[in-house]
Image 1 (tube, one colour):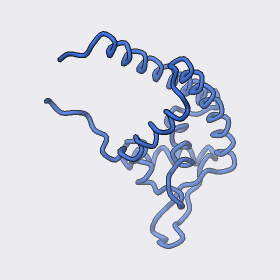
Image 2 (image 1 turned 135 degrees about the vertical axis):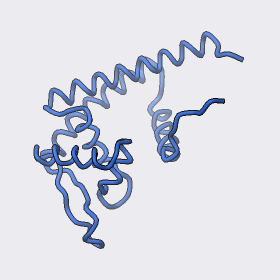
Image 3 (image 1 turned 90 degrees about the vertical axis):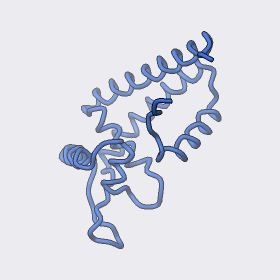
Image 4 (image 1 turned 90 degrees about the horizontal axis):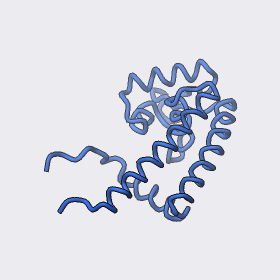
Length: 152
C-alpha cells in the first residue's frame, strides 16, 4: 500500500524542520568562524558517551567520515585552538581528543542557540521535550547500524 497524503505531509514537515535546524546551525557555526564540520566535531567530542574522551576512530564513526578526514578535521580545529590531542592514560599509543577552554566556550554558545532553535521547531511540530529525549536515546542505541535500505 502506498503512503497516504498525511504520511507525505508528515515526512515533508519533518524534513523541512530538519533542514531549517541544520541551516540555522550552519549559520551559527559560520558566525563563530567555524565550518559546519568543525562545529559537529566539537559536539562529538563534548557529547561522546563514556568516561574517556573520544579517540580519533570514535570521532570518525560519530561523524560518519573516513579516519583520514577526521584527522584533517582535528588538525584544522587544533590549529584554531579548539581541541587538543593527548595520550590515553592506560595505552600511550591511543590518542584522545578533548576540547580546549576556547572550544568549550564556542560550543557552549552554539549549543545554547541550537537548543533554543530546536525548542522553537519542536513547539511548531507540537513535539515534547520528553519525546525528543526518548527519540534520541532510541536512535543512539541503534546508531551503530544506520544504513540505507536496500532494494526490497
